[in-house]
Image 1 (cartoon, rainbow, N blue to C red):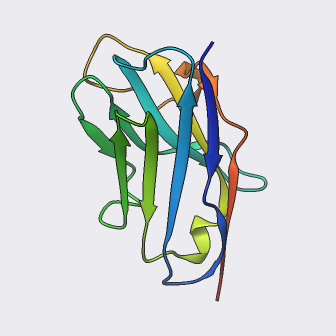
Image 2: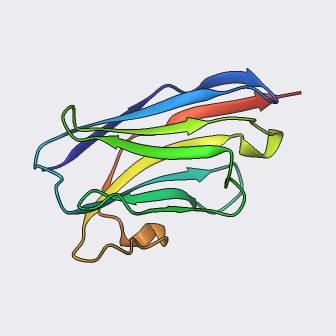
Image 3: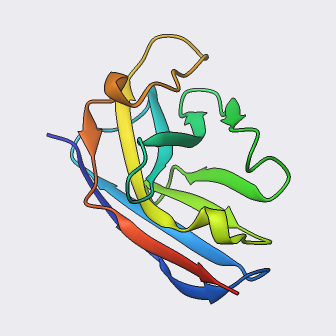
Length: 126
């Protein structure tokens, strides 16, 4: 059973930065798609960024390109999301997710992902 635990969220002013972490345990996530998703109140869950653990290929939502960076640390089995130049509209609960995958192209649809963390809240204020 894959377990994911997020941390690193918080309250920051617009323009600020955070580093979100996702600690993994359970199976060796060697050929998995892992992603960060977010959900704001009253809105659907949306993809932020994904990474293929087997090769490192990444995807970013247009709204975060150039500001967010997804990365992995295979040795420590952690997933990270560096979030910079935060905007008010980045306020949301951020979730880490994973699914075993055989292609370097990772899906962006949240329903595809099998394993989820409990989320970490990011609140951006003006």
